[in-house]
Amino acid sequence: MQTPATLPDLGHTDARPVHWLATATAMAAVVAGAGLLQPDAAKADPSGSGIVTAAAPAPAPAPDAAGVELPLECGGAGTTVVKNASGDLDGDGGAETVVVARCAAGSGTPPSGVYVLARATDGTARTVATLLDPARHLSVGDFAVRDGVVTATVLGYSSPAVPSCCPDQLESVKWQWRGGKFVQSAQASPDTDRA
Image (cartoon, rainbow, N blue to C red; front, side):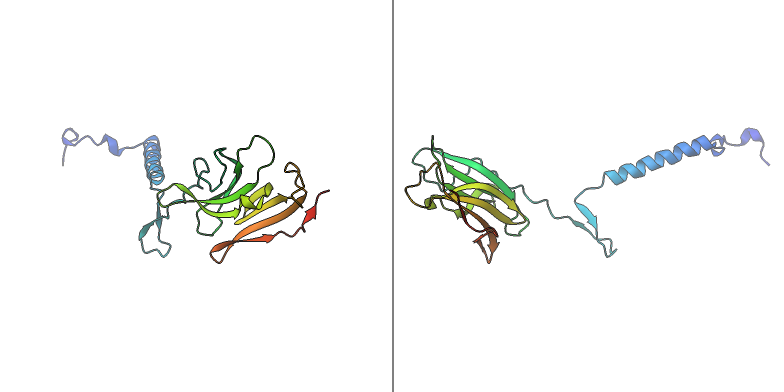
């Protein structure tokens, strides 16, 4: 039999509840920290096979209309983007930007163009479609992009005698991607003339 003088000091084996509480708290902090530090791009396979796959990258933001050369012929007057809105128009998961633009005229109501911008493979914005050609001499009033549909109120003129400041015709139109192209149709409200 050994005497107490020869026994090793085993003071740590006589733990108090405070010791166990501190140990449990430290372990919980380590486990929580490890959970927070997991990469966001990883997700477990739902089949339970243990295979981890990378999540799809987030879609690129909609193209910015600033700095994009629009197909407007303004004779050196420059262009003005009057309105813009973004949304996924073709169902590919990436957002396009639709802009209403016109020549920067000092007075009057220059005709509007409506253009669709998409992000090119190099990340720059480019014009991919013209929905309303300024050559039609129409202006755009209300304008929106919702659920893949572009809607606008288009203002026009009943004759060349109507002053350009005061369009006297109004039509509600929409454009939607169908069969690989944008198709224009009238909205539910009929064409109306303003007196």
